[in-house]
Length: 177
Image (cartoon, rainbow, N blue to C red):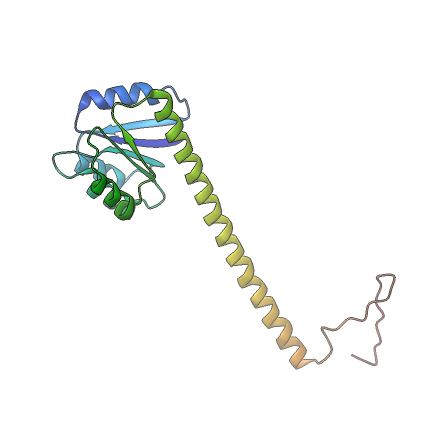
């Protein structure tokens, strides 16, 4: 189940977005009409994706998504707007690390596809981070084991050396130990 937060100061836009996105059964949609209210909600609820309008009265979408990035860095961040300002778009990409800019009016199929792609990309990033953490933990474990082997070898020279026979067996010479 994916939790998606939609933020727009126009209730009619939120209703249209909810109607379009509500067809996805594995998406739980929440809406907010004010950025501050959305941020309060995000302090207690995790979201996989946040879609916000660019132009809102309290703060613009870029300012909002910068705070979203601080609160929930793994949440995908998208802006939707009928107002296209290249400088603002660049600011959104650079400062808030948005995934995509969606124009109003939107095409329902393109909107759903874009959100599906964003969620898939997020899943990949989260999985990569999990695997990287797992590799780091395994490396630490190997380092500890290597240190233990080196300490054993220093204390009992030759104890970590095994003379393997061609058939895979090994010979224990009690005189060597």
